[in-house]
View: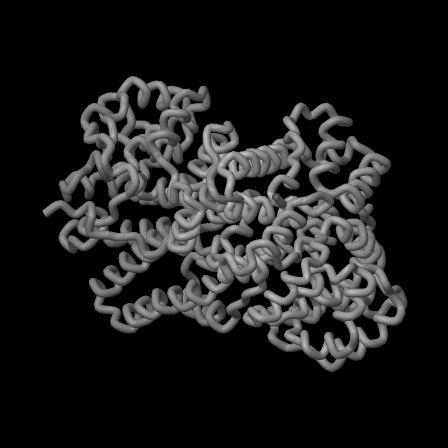
Length: 631
């Protein structure tokens, strides 16, 4: 019996998005998944051997449901495989070539090309990617295991490389997908072809007569180290369990058998942080970040990234897992990610800010304090209301009112904040801004959201205007700890930028979608205003998406989608060139101008100004006039 299909994936982060993404795509009349054949055609025309390898991989990928009537995947070109092989020493690319050879039924031909030898030479004889060449022959497996204990499925690296290639394909203007589609589909498309077989390796290690068990224990640790997928970690556990069974160590077997349920419990908890319901809010930067983290630290670190940035913590499950794992390779990288993603201790920063006499400091401090409460579940709501009551008479700044409203939402203290007068202050000093007043409405209060939308208030995103305030305060905090940093230092600026992106668009969007035609006009006004400058790209992107959904005219829909795509591509182009040395060379005056532009004319205009002043050569989108939608 052939053993290659006996092992199925233990868990794949990308699959969590599939249901909602497909439904959303169908609702918008777009293809719910990427057409791998079309993407492959474009990628194979590129000069980059990595892109070509992804193209070959996608040639063998399953077709989307709407294209099941087309011809079967074409056989890969041996000449192309040979060209890529000669141009690379990357273990990830070589693994992709093995997968292509296997899927295309060209194992013997690829062996003659030198693909198996490349695995031996450049990937330490990686057993998982030699498997197609070894087949089910246990003698050959024994010989291979005697020579190498390296086993890495490279799934996280393949997913990242596939994502980068598909992003380039999308950026080429060839197509336009829903936000998050590329990040969702990349790992699934990659794994649909490049999932290695574990069965023969397990069978070889199960054979007690070949004396390989000590080597198999080393293989198990290799599977559990080196950026493991959850599948490979689970297989590593199984190999260790088999070894303990063979040695008659029942206590060790029981201990190992407890790890996988604990791992599943931890991942289930972390999954609450994956933005499945609000996939439209996922940015390309976030997609790239989680795939990059998974490639660097392992698949579960991808879960930990989403959980961390969405304020989900699972200390009980994590501690239990770490206790059981003990001396085995660690599966959780939460501590490293926390330090990497948040270079500042938010609780310490919040406490320092709240001790200040400055209105700005205290407002930001309350907001940060409520944010940390999302992790701990503990917050002094009475103290929050007392401080807000004290601060309200002292400020009319719409930006600070927005932060206070956000603090109320994060502390689940909306009703008390309304009674304290915060909602009325937003009406008086920020024209009833929906993005601020909405923070004071319970997420499931559809009636209140409908009433707010019908009032057709201002829709102004203050996030970009908050970047400068937060950067200045973080700089002052660092100075108080004896560290010197300018507000425009890349670490400070990047952290301030991420912290400022706190706009909640999910509730009004969901209200509009659920209400249907009843709220069409007010929802169109909301979408138009969200799509306008000086709102940030995140807010504008969602506004444009809604306009495209609700426009009756196909030409207008295409115009909106063209602008949205051009806007996001332009942002990626500019940000892709703004590395740390570039910022350092820019100087303080240039940085001050950028921050001022962010606050006054908006994120897109600020990027356009940088593009012009620094001659970056990125193509800015042509202006879009959405007034025609009002007719």
